[in-house]
Image (spheres, rainbow, N blue to C red):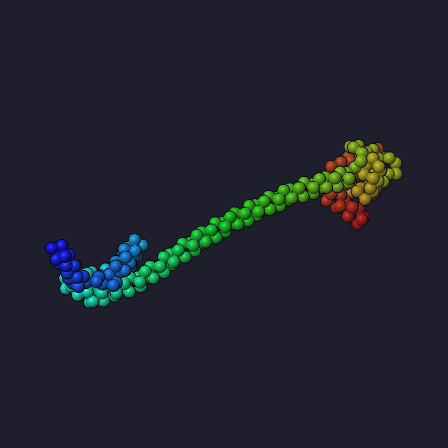
Length: 232
């Protein structure tokens, strides 16, 4: 009895093996590929290509489960897998382009920041240079003013005598040449011009005349006096 039961069980197993149909070769591969592309964002990036891939896969599913034609279904699965491979390659290139664009954007931003930094540095350097030039100009102006003051003081009379009483036989050049007056005979026109009210002829003076002696005159006035003296 036991041998009969075992024989029947073995027969049933053989029938099941003979009746079972192997699954299509490409179905699992394309299913895995579709899942991978979905996770990588293919539906949003390439919706038309992705939908075409899914439609081909679903067509294979319909042929397998409705028509029970494994061979034809496997043809659709293979077609879907090939489309998926192309889509995966395109998605990879797209991501590489995006990554390259991002790298370029970052590089451009860094270049812009560096350019702005250099421009600020150049502007600060220009400002410092202008300030240095301004200070140098001020110093030069002060030095020139001091030199002019010293020069004027050298040409001013040593003595502070405001007047001079004419002695017998004195002339204006002799008076100007006195050390307490100007110590320079060619400056006599300064005395002459300051005393025009009592000197009609610069070559003729009268003893006892009290002449005003200008003590504050410019360099230009001194030069003009010497020029006038040279013509007389």
